[in-house]
Image (cartoon, rainbow, N blue to C red; front, side, top):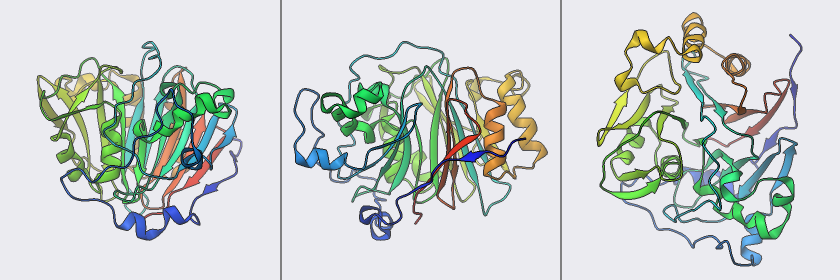
Length: 344
């Protein structure tokens, strides 16, 4: 096989806002931490402060993939309404966690959806853990390179912290989601969007156990998305699939080792024999079982390639102890972009 070409790596290690003091002081309280000012509204003109929040934005490839460090605070519970919601194009997604080598655990994810720009986003809120996440900016009204450059549209990126599609924080907790046929959770607690719970988890949870407790605090609203389930893992080896059915939160596959994974069926009502009828889950199971959960970054990318679909938009591997993020856009497997999150 031809050796992959690695794109220019991006490191934010030297950036003061991502200093160790910030991400070691992350929030662990069960109460909501103080919230910062709301981002600029869609109809307003950006001022100097908001322009400063976007000053690190730069293009990485022509998918297009962009990268940005968001400077400043954000309101985790602010409502975000996409200008237009893309039609359901068959949300796929494959996720797995490889923990056979506990010194280098891997969390990997294919995002299978219609084509749209992607943003690698670094955040370091003063009241939460630093993290890196990937955002489909279509949901922010930013659909092209021109939109990233024009002030009228790029200001939508001020809400990017609120819509992470997958990510990892500086404590080595990773989370992503995949669509399922139904999601009907508890109708109590504070209502948040289906991607917003990912932001809350990245900011406030250091372990899978802490993340699971956060699900109890919120009612997840799927108005602007397909029904989803959530896959969580931490660098201590814990993992779980969170599903919402019959007005309850159901936790499946908790602590499975030396690997775990999820695709687009609900574990709660899919017998073990039926799960292997999903070709992606069967393929991933074969590789992960054969390797006893021991995969390095390159092997994790190869497995994502094995289970990719025609509409796989990005493939990402999070190194949960190293902080290394490896990302491929548009199934261009020979070009692997690397980024670095300082770990705490």
